[in-house]
Length: 238
Picture 1 (cartoon, rainbow, N blue to C red):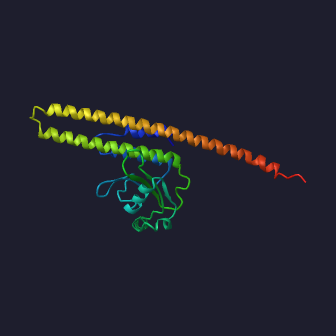
Picture 2 (cartoon, helix red, strand yellow):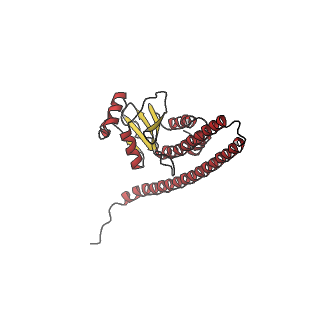
Picture 3 (cartoon, rainbow, N blue to C red):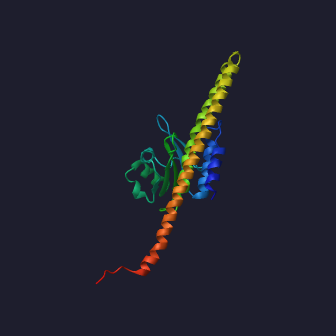
């Protein structure tokens, strides 16, 4: 499994302005698979009418339905499903999982500050598959993945607009100036992306510090427990 910082940087490096997020999704699939295996997976981003989806495997079929995706987005935290009875309240997803032979799920909201609404979905064909998954490692990947995907989509849309303008105004003497302004806009967008990534990294480092402090406190409590047991209960004076 990659170091978390290295994995996050790999996502940043895969963020391109011309592929509609495909390169980023491929990189996300690789770093997630190194942390926990999965049989099916997808990234779903909310659009005005429906969710836009990218598969994390060669299977392009949907993994879950919108009923569960909306729930994950509303609760704002990872959701683990260990067996099918746990999703009976989401009948469309329950039926789809049974149809596909999937039994376990792990879902992460794309909850980066300012990021898109959606989720990363992982699935396996047997129960309790994600009981030992490293959530503290995977959730920062999901947050960064959502932020990078949003930037990739915005930059791709900007590139298409530039290409359209170039075709329609090739003979216009103002086309060069307009292209220059659009290029400046791209640079500004990239600068904002760097600032967002820096903020996300700072947030990640703070989270790691909190986890380290909590682990140290837990280790201290564990070390005190045998000593307390050896002394036995205190007795009052007669």
